[in-house]
Image 1: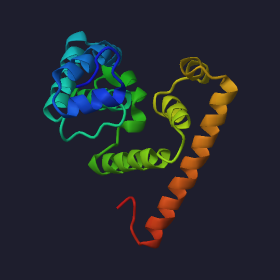
Image 2 (image 1 turned 45 degrees about the vertical axis):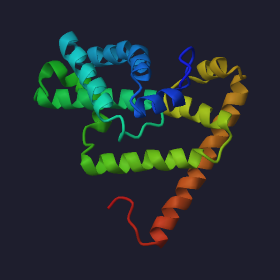
Image 3 (image 1 turned 30 degrees about the vertical axis):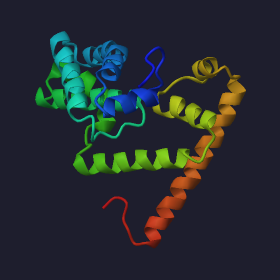
Length: 195
């Protein structure tokens, strides 16, 4: 049984996967308001934002056994982003939503094929990170996936900013080499990553 005094993210993800309602409740309480705030800021519609977040959590519970989550923040806020994009598209890109839609312009053409490619890339990056020390992995994820500043990461991990820069440089270099090797392997095997 999971110790709920201070469960780790891994414990919460595993608890969710096996249908532990306490784990789900902790995740809900931890993320609901922040997710709602992002959706409401983008949509400027409180009721729609609340409904959108409820839908994400309903789906999270229903599909908990099959969803692959490596990081709660990344998964949940990506879900918010995609739901907001869908809502804006459904609104017919009305003028009132135009500026919010532009905020997500780089994601607007994420059709099914691109989504699959994006998910594959995320999985490859996760795999590339596995070979790195835990601290280096954590620095990379906080900076590149959660957009934390170097100062915030340094404070959170009790490191100097120089140490954070070192870990980030090390991780970035390692991931580049790993992805390059994967791409070369795919090309040698005659497999198109984008097919």
